[in-house]
Length: 312
Image (tube, rainbow, N blue to C red; front, side, top):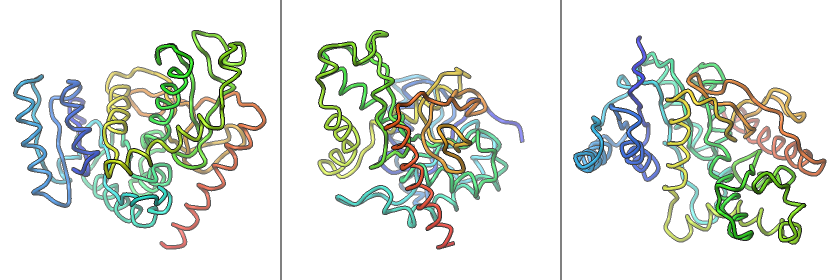
């Protein structure tokens, strides 16, 4: 089946899926945007609402459809899954989400899909690995949004404390998108200057900043019942990198294959992203504490996958 590079299919028309579709429409990356959901009436309603907005924006065909529509898409985005309730952790919903995500990925594969699959369902690292297994796609073509959003939160909070624009801050969060994520302070640069070389940087409460970054999603969900804008923007950024073959380095969830002593599990590492998904995984330079934390994060994620395998 010929791939249509101007087409994206989004599986799941909930808060994240609909917001991502709307943001993609505004961005003008695709001329054909298809929303697919088990609740066909909701997918149709969201598509109609976005299509109405599109009349005032860039030309695009926004519509609802079924899994057959995903076969020739350049990118499929999976947002369907179970959502954490209240203080429930992302990992606690793994079993419920896994069944949904695996079914979505299988049905997309059965439609003949051969493009790049982006997974945003929580817990995203485990769900990306579930989707890759279920779809049978090469690992580089199945990407989890991972800590792309966490890294943006990290940079913004650093920028606020240091009184600079976020664009001036380089920094990544790696590992799990969740409680064991690793804020890599050793790699932070402010206009090319290491954090430890800045007087106000050396005085930062790093543990509090890392905790605030990690808890941001919970705080948002507690206040409004869900998250949507941040993760939707992360989805759009990944779609943009694939659609434009940017070869840009982004911290996203992929199958680790030995970097920092971690292998065999999906988690976030710096990845070169292009038209075929993950073109290359970079091995980050971490200090000893950060490297240990990344390995602990991998151990937690391996445990989740082992539990899911046991349920299967």
